[in-house]
Image (cartoon, rainbow over all chains, first blue to last red; front, side, top):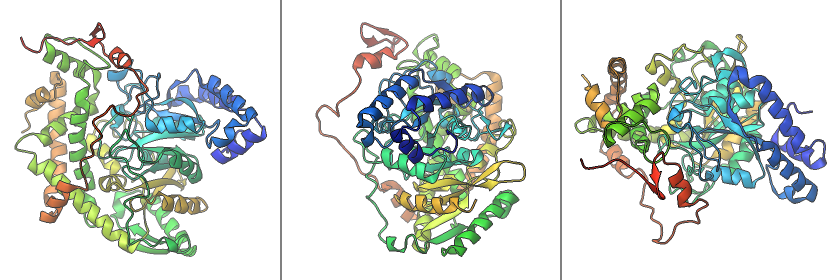
Length: 475
Length: 94
């Protein structure tokens, strides 16, 4: 009864009384108990989930649940999104015992919609990584093959959905952290337009990139959650109402009949053959269904990853200055105040976090600022301009999500550059602040899922959902 | 050659000697890679756009901000060292 559920199915079945919310939550908790010891998707299952389910059951009986679009839907939350009263560690020893004093805006909205928070999920420390190997609480394994990574940094959320440990999850995307693990685990992941979802209550990594987004089994589920969490928020001055800032050149009337799809031109050697084949298969299917398909070139896209690894560490070094052993989290005593800072940060941060803070310190330091940070900002504008040009010709851009399916645990862990190149297809949208969705594109011969990605113009998430639903019919 | 020791001090991170040598090696590789950016042909147009980047100051009224759903006590409580409702730190001046 509980297999192949979606949000709309759960909703109608709960309201009809096919099962109770308590029964639904027990099903997921039983699944988690069985599978999580081997996978490590969840860091904690919330002990009040059953209590919350009981409340929803009462609301269903009394009819109050009718106005709550997520009534009784069990959702997992990445461990960098604050839930009042719950621990929130960002996958770091630094915040091992930290408890959130307030709800993130996205959490507040989902709570009001009636969802059940079932637990918090594992992630790369402070969302820095592409494999969840950088978590201070152990790696998350891929439910499709336990010798492989689930991707990162939202690896726990992706694995939780894929192992049927929840109906949907929240993740956060800074360079690909929702889309890459979604692709590795065979689920749908949306990176919203920068500003579409409030960042209030998301532990900051790189503030001009970070976005909270849904990870789900279907495009429709991702759409339902996105429509609940989006919108301007007083607590985040960079948030925008999602109808603003629309590109005027765009003719919405063409939808959904004959959208123009630009297939990204890239060096085929940069991706596995089976990834390239899935892309070609999809392009052919789109064309057959009436879409106009053409190749699209973004001349400066090759600078995306270098640009990303200047700007993000710069913002990281500023944002993570707050972890100083004074305001919250870990404190390791030194000889004096500076000693406290240095000892606390040495003990609380893992290798990748230290590496990025120091890299950011370097690119922002006098003498290097112009060569790295200022140059990267200019390059960011260059890449934005490429996308603007492309979206005059096409309505959507199709590309791989990642160069390959999930890699082996340990395969890239010792080489930061290799890990950074995981972002080659996901970073460009972040550089430009664009929305992009990762959708499953079948299973390759090794039994591993792969994902493809659609990118839309600013605030055109509606196009992504439309095309993703069409795409779901191809695989 | 990157002065890792000086950077660590600026970043307020104590490093042991194995971390220092590892970071030294990583830095050479990463900086080599991100130096690719030099080849990007950016002009005054991008410089101007980068400066503006579509941003403007957003200020709120100088009144109490949105209704808070937490108390000052809860925030102070998260600090590792506190006394009498205040966060306690070591001497700033020696």
